[in-house]
Length: 71
Figure 1 (cartoon, one colour):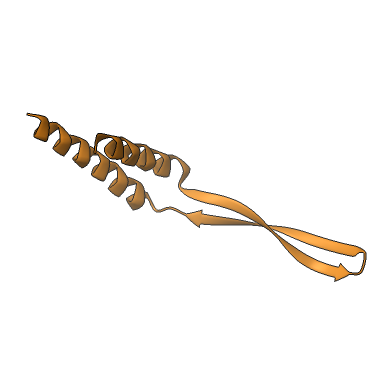
Figure 2 (cartoon, one colour):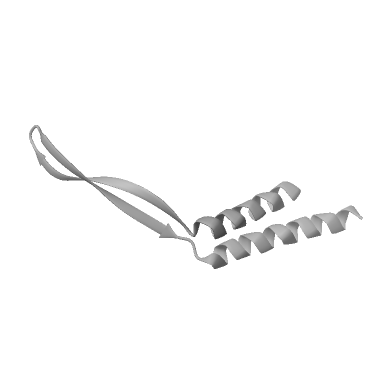
């Protein structure tokens, strides 16, 4: 459980830092025999700050609950 809590805290911090995931796709625009033309499109998958906050809070809660069980 401690490992899961630490992983959630790390994911929460990363989500706050990057605010989204960017990726690039290639699409064929023209394909006429030996002539190939491609276009690169950049896409962004936004991560709202609430996702980072929930992951961070969940990780802290797991660490706190694991610490309480040890006593």
